[in-house]
Length: 239
Ligand code: PGA
Image (tube, rainbow, N blue to C red):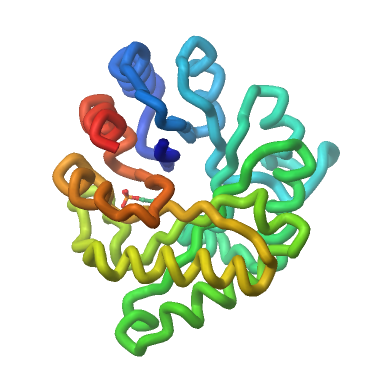
């Protein structure tokens, strides 16, 4: 069983969402857990689809006077069961801090929404051998011991995330395996917790079969390819 999460970012408008839904509506997920994270305004279009629904962010606030925010309990009321938290695009563009990410994780867990924490190094951190250090800081800076086993960890090296036009070069299977083992061991050592680890960054129909031979991975976080029904279907059927 793999956990396959589609992060549709801000790629689609309504007609394209409807086309996508038609394409994935009747596919066989096998025993995979399939989660689509649409833009908030399209969540209700998924009411008849067999997949789970996730959100791409969650507010640090609770219900009340927070203009433009969507809270964990609001998502819960729309049957959202997963939340992507700390995506690198938000850490970079919205300057999300570890403290905010920690709060978002707590807010999600309080509503029984499963947080998917995105972690990963940028190109220069990789080149200077800091990958493990970055991952450790991101995990220890945003996870409380009591919540550690309620979070799914998505390793997304920033340099492997596609620019929306072309897929990027991704790490080798050996590198991904090494990092998945590192994250699992860190969680065991620090929190006595078993962790589920996903890989994300330019996952697509061309690399899914090879990626799927990494037994240490529990699934994938997919951006661009989760906006195209045919590609997402192929990935699900080959996971
Ligand atoms: P990508 O995005 O699959 O388009 O590289 C992955 C992500 O940012 O979650």
